[in-house]
Image (cartoon, rainbow, N blue to C red; front, top):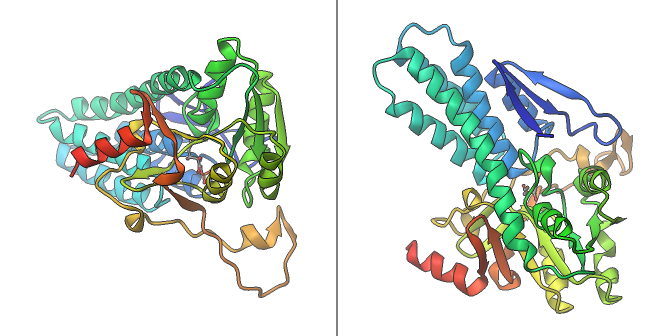
Length: 340
Ligand code: MRU
C-alpha cells in the first residue's frame, strides 16, 4: 500500500494526524491543498513531502486553464513558491520542487507536452522513491544480526515515504531475510510519530515493537536492551544530520553506551554544500507542547520552545545508509571533501 497516489488529477493520501485511531484517506486537487496538508502534517517525513510537492506541481499542470506555456510556467512558479514556504528543514522538499521545475524548463513549444512532462516527472519520482528505499533496506540489512534489538526515533517508515521507509526499510529488509529483529520505538514528543505511526506500521507488519517514552532511552540502553540505533534524516549536511528533535539526545546516549548509531536516508536528503549553521530548524506552535491532543497540560502563558528538529554532529554517526550503499563516517567525510 502506497502512502500517496496519483489518480488522474487527484492526489490521495492517508491523513497522518488522525492515525492510528482513524485510517482516513484524503483527496487533494490543488497545489494549495497539498501545501496545507504538508504544513498541517497530514503528510510528513522528508521523502514523502518531497513527492507530495512534486504532485502539487503536477496538480497545477493537470488542472491548468493556461493557454500558453509562459502562463503555465508562471502558475508553476507560483505553486513552487507556496510549497517552498510550507516547512523549512527537510531538503527533499526543495530538491523535489527544483527537479520538477528544471524538467518543466526543458520543454519548449508545446503546452500539452509541458503538462504531461510535469505529471510524469512527479510520478517517476514517486516510483523512484520506492525503489530507492528498497535499496536502502538491502544495503542496511547487512548491518543487522539475527536477534538484534534496534531503537528508532520518530517515524522513518512507509508513512514517511511513498512506501517501505528508510530506517524502517532496513528493519523490514532484515526481517524479510529471516532475521528476528525487535524494535524499540521512542514515542517522539510532541507529535508522537513514534507512538502513533512507527508502532502502528511495525505492528501491521508483525515485527515485534515495544514503545517507550523518549526519556526512557538512556535506561533501556544502560540495561543492555539496545544493540543498534537507526534513524532517518531530514537534511544531511557536511558536518551533521538534521532529524526529528530528540535524535541528538539518542545519538549521544548511544555513543556513551557503545551502541552503533546509523542514519538511513536517500541521497536526495544530502545537502553537501551546507553546514549545520545553515540549516533552518522549524519552530512549531507552542500548543504542541502545552497540550496533549486537545487537553492543556501546562499553565496558560508559560514560555515554550518547540524546535521540530535537531542536528546530530557527525562524530556520533557510525554510518549513513543510502541507496548507493553503506557509507562509514570516514567514507562520508571523503565524499564531503570531494564536494568542496
Ligand atoms: O516532522 P516530521 O514528522 O516530518 O519529521 C520526520 C522525521 O524527522 C523523519 O525522521 C525524517 O523525515 C526521515 S523520514 C524517512
